[in-house]
Image (cartoon, rainbow, N blue to C red; front, side):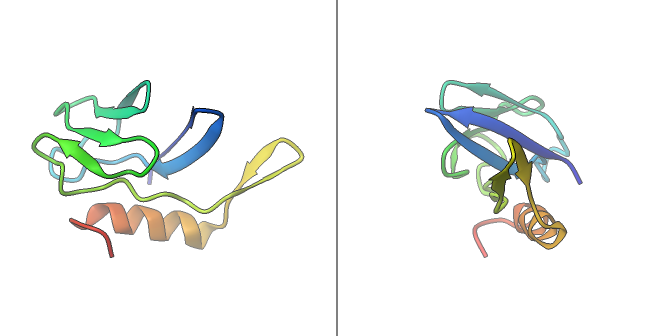
Length: 92
């Protein structure tokens, strides 16, 4: 399982880093848009919703986290849930 963390407008976001149809595990961030490095499908960075492209039906699920002593802390079950939700088209 791969994940990405990034900051948009001062807010931290953690999401599954996978694009199931094209089998990519890499995204670029341009302002508030995530772009799949393989198929160029675009997603809203703040919501994970698809904007356009071949894999648009696979929104990027977010991971619940908290910041503790300057560290981003997540539970394994929340990581698994976000990853599994991203493998399925649409939202659960």
